[in-house]
Length: 325
Ligand code: UDP
Image (cartoon, rainbow, N blue to C red; front, side, top):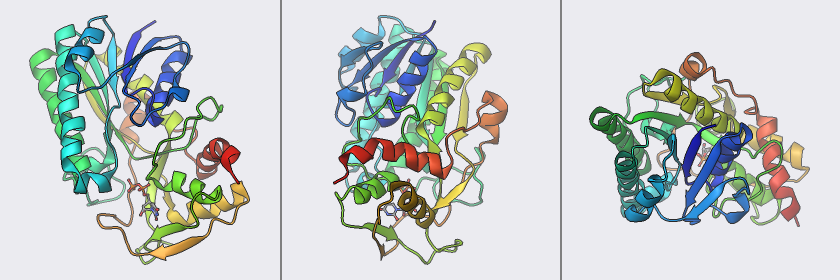
């Protein structure tokens, strides 16, 4: 049994990661300030410590309890917001991570699994995008994540901390077994917004552009189910333990789904009309972003199980349907 500290473990992705480690019998401690995570997502089997990553003394005090690994998912993640409020992203994402690295270093935590993002790549030069694709973020959020990857590299060189940087593509869906029901606060991503239209909280979905060079003209993304992402974290941890070397790897489904096809599947699954309006393209959006996850398959034996469009939509609807008017 391993002892895992999950920073940001009450959040949308974090709660699924916690569940995955608990499911195989590991001991889990969650550190979260509940700014976007929720109490509902905490599990009785895990120890919860409420705290902020900007509280370096609090972090260090907890880290000294001794852990086999720290999983770091505590970050702001709205790319659009990061362009208008960069200071917030500098402080939380970069300064907060420095506190985490310093606590891990001082407390002797030997491994870190870090939530990185496909946003480190910027505009695609080629599809699918593998890990050798140039990194040139086009939003400040992606820049903060790339800087953290670089910090991880230095803490490995100077302090011997092994890390796994997991470059998520578009995280979506909810626990297929229905054990996680806490909704993200102020969601900004496509599928939760589609659900808010389905339950009547929003009158329509704005589709940001239908004149892209894609089969139906709407943007194509690689959506990966959070339970698959959670499994990726467990595998990345096991890799760090067994191989004792660091890893930077994509986690994506390798399948492109357009905005229009996501809406079509959501209409069928929910039985709701889900009105849409075509709006202007969103600045900074690319036509198509699709991962190559060959490295995750080869190195981690990782293969998405839940990342088909139907399961993504149905598992999300399971959480939203009770709120429908
Ligand atoms: N999108 C949309 N309407 C929305 C939100 C998103 O058409 O209200 C589109 C967006 O342009 C992109 C896809 O849905 O093609 C996924 O966007 P999201 O913000 O979820 O993730 P991103 O790919 O930007 O990280």
